[in-house]
Length: 329
Image (cartoon, rainbow, N blue to C red; front, side):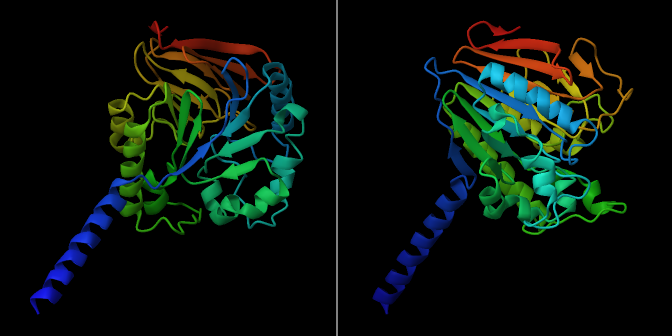
């Protein structure tokens, strides 16, 4: 009897340890995109709020992305969500995938890997279809997950599903229907995500830490700051000394930041833009607000990260550099 109790106690302790360590280890999927340039640098394009089957100047933005991508010899593209309007994809056979992605981003320089997060419009369709390997079989460039970590040499990107944070999508969805499969219960989903993100950030040894989400934290766009992200996500970013937070959602190009702090970059000008919409913001922080279409490029080395915003004609709207040696300037 004593032996049985001892065995049971040992099994219980072992199970408890396993549960403890499983909770302690980040569950975020991790990917590695090798740096192939001889100088170790990395070049990326960032675009968001684009999937309109070429409409609202999506095709023109794509054309300029191709030209800039060729000039920079980009390594890959990041999409900050709202990949397919108006209501995501109906399934993995939805022709909107090719009509808004494969048939639009055709320039040779854009035949690179695309890493994507989901936007609120994507959640209004069949979410699983965008995460499906079936789309990757149709177009090898496509990669989309709710949340994941991407390591590329000296930089680590933390892609975060910001949609479940937004309270009104649950309490006041208006005439929208959201696909919350594998998200409910919401509180547990958010708690696990924040835990996993915090752990992944703490374990990171990358020179640069960039977080990617769909919704804005600091933004002078029509949607304004997302209070739930300010309350729950921002403290984790600040504690872990994240360099940049990149988002879409507001259909504009935007840079908000201060010396020594997190830079908040919006690249939501992939198609339809909102002319004349801007909320009051401290001009010392608001470095750029452009209410038109366009995209952003990143050039990253061990010591510097250079960001450039382009309009639909390829004109440079704004550029700035972060330096690990001399600080932010």
